[in-house]
Length: 192
Image 1 (cartoon, helix red, strand yellow):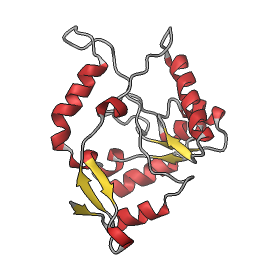
Image 2 (image 1 turned 135 degrees about the horizontal axis):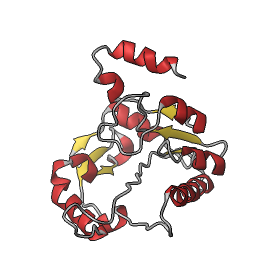
Image 3 (image 1 turned 90 degrees about the horizontal axis):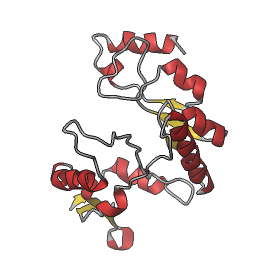
C-alpha cells in the first residue's frame, strides 16, 4: 500500500462528472513484424503481461480510507488486459484520411460523454477540431522545424500543430535535452 501524495489527492479531489483524469492512447502498429510474422492483439497483450511487473503505477488501484481520515492509498491490483488493450482495424484503404475519420469519431464520442478535451497527434488534431470546435486538444510529439523525430513516428512542428487546432503543445526532449534549454524554448516560442 502506498499513500497518495498531496498532489495526487488534489487531482483526485478536482474530479467530478465533467472533469475526469482518464488517459488513453492510440498506437498505430504495422500488421507485419520485422520477422515477417503478423502482429496480433494477443501478442501485444502478452508483451504487456510479461512487463507489468516493471511498471507498478499501471497496476495501482485506488482505495479510500474509512471515514476519509487520510488521503486514499494505492494498492497493487490485477490489470484486465482484455479491457485495456483493444484493437481497431481501419476500414479500407487504411490511409491517413481513414485514420482522421476515426479520430473525429472518437473526438465526437468524448464530446458526447461530456469531456472537455482529448490528447491526439498533431496529424489528426485538425480532424478532431473540425468534429469538436470548442474542444481542448493536447498534442504530444511536437518537434521544432529541422529537429529529429527521436522515437516519435508522427511528429508535427509547433506552428503546424497550432494552425491545425492544438490547444496545448507537448514539447519535451527538444527543450530538456538541448545544450541550452532556455535558448531552445525561446527559439521554439519565436515560431508561434
